[in-house]
Length: 349
Ligand code: PAP
Image 1 (cartoon, protein in one colour):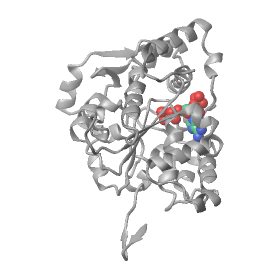
Image 2 (spheres, helix red, strand yellow):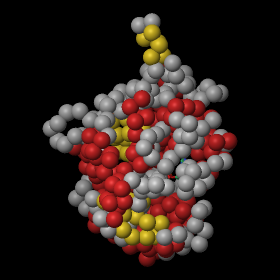
Image 3 (cartoon, helix red, strand yellow):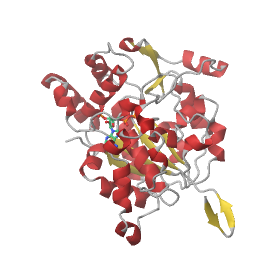
């Protein structure tokens, strides 16, 4: 707890698990959906992923969202009010979310929780338990809890930027908050997604996940529209959106942590640099370090869908697609990506 002017004030971000009894993500339809929820979903085009026990996705404003999250998207658009100091970590599933969530929390909370501290929240909690998952809050009736969080609030989302319109206002308008987006080379992202899904759906074929990625119907997809929404905003409004890449983070994590800190208005001081704070954050959030944390070896990411937390920490490499895709598959995906990204200034080399 920080002290200002002789009185104690809570300063964010606080580990979300410490203020919320459960703290786990919610990504599925509530057991008793509201009438509004049922009406909205029944009016949308929907599809199922057969190899995943007929997991249902609904197309809301051009994006294929897990069934329960279409109403959350509508609610987010209507009711989410960002504060100027908010920081939102955004990504597609398997785009590098967990790593960026950990790095962002460690960076923003470093004054209350120095990275070397034995009782650092990231040594007892899964990174996802440190941040509220925006859409999960809006489908589980917990959105009011966001109001009670001290500033700066740090939250995460898989939603496309269009679902959080207040975060990055239209050209010319002021306001909004800060959004840090991470994206990953699509072929590696798809491989990572398949390994993750298999933990709960062992019979799921790789080709099935590959196909839904290519035809745009993967959860939160089409992936190209998701990525381009944030990419374009980062070009138009660099003060609102920082666009990071997983491969760049692997190549030089320290420099990207510095970029992140500058972007959120908390650059590292010379004294912090000298004390090795950046190195401490990078080490605390490294794959090996997070893998060793008890909370990351047990339990579930989402208590309803039962994906084990340890599935979030697999290999963490580039080019894993080479051991999963035929040359034809790689070519098909590269062609789609080249076609969709043409003329945007974004490319995956
Ligand atoms: P999420 O969107 O469901 O939270 P996300 O964290 O984006 O998942 O994806 C997990 C991937 O990030 C895994 O990649 P892989 O399957 O190719 O191995 C996981 O290994 C990787 N990952 C998780 N934490 C880290 C980390 N600290 N450093 C590098 N990679 C990481």
